[in-house]
Length: 216
Image (cartoon, rainbow, N blue to C red; front, side, top):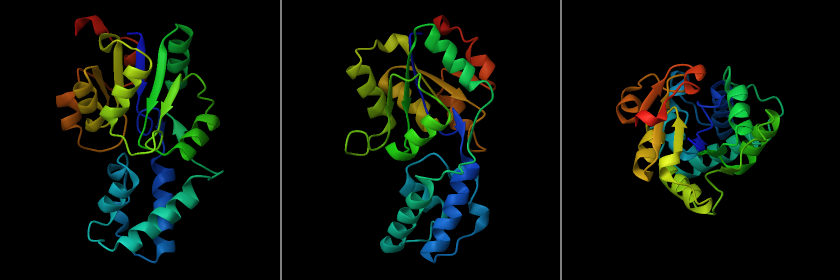
């Protein structure tokens, strides 16, 4: 493969502890109590408003939802004490791909500000472009991000792979016509849909280096 598109949260970085801590504070500041048992890694991955619905499915008041979102952004976007971390082996894998002349991209539902903060924090300067949910001025789906990357950089679908930890990542890849690789170290306890919709499944970062994409 020549072109690699990566999801960010749950694939390159583990930000679950940071995100959940910030959501806890955001709900507290919005004055809305939540069941702390719902603050687990299973809710991480979708866009912000969808995560809030997963944490508090009974919450229908749009003013409170907006308040939670605003508080979360104020806390998370500029957090200098972010406890997120790269998964073991990811940095070396990305660096090796870059040194081999591969084209690297990120497609994430994170907005631009926290994404670039994390990219800077972990020195992830090997990416040719980074697609965030607010990059184009409207909320893109993962499929749209992949399609946009393919078009903007004139990439062949047959030479492109999308790597992610969520079923939505690999489903988007299949719909966009590129190879779908699901990783099992990310978020969520039920990986059934991820496995069913992936061309390849890997349990460890090291296995990414051993994939023989010619078997597709």
